[in-house]
Image (cartoon, rainbow, N blue to C red):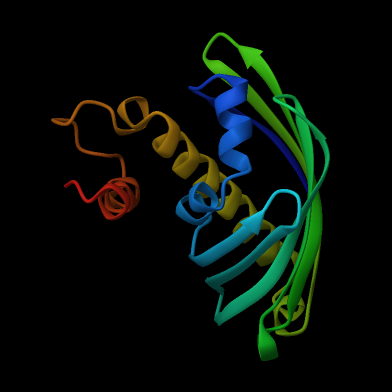
Length: 173
């Protein structure tokens, strides 16, 4: 599976870059993350629980960072095993550029899945991967600039998911 996209983040490139290297921020932003530990130098270990179609699994994996160019670019490589559900492995090249809104984050992802996950078919897997990426960047935006992600408090969110997540992370309702 390959996927590329760009997202506007309302924070400067240095802030976005630093956030991508912080285990606590990654844990708050990765959908289903239960635990993220480690350092950018040694890599991260993560435990993530997700449901893809009818398959629900807890993945334990490692993520390494390379080609680090401060505030501009990094390469993320990872592999996770979900027991009988299968495995996922892949990488992403992430670039950051200053923009009027803050930072234009671009990414190119290449990933491979195996086991029961692979049996679901590329349409389900691709849709799930896109949803996960969108959710990660919405969470990152909410973490870095909650006022722009949450909008006015009197406005109802378009869907309950964003407000529910924001409430869980911040403890505010």
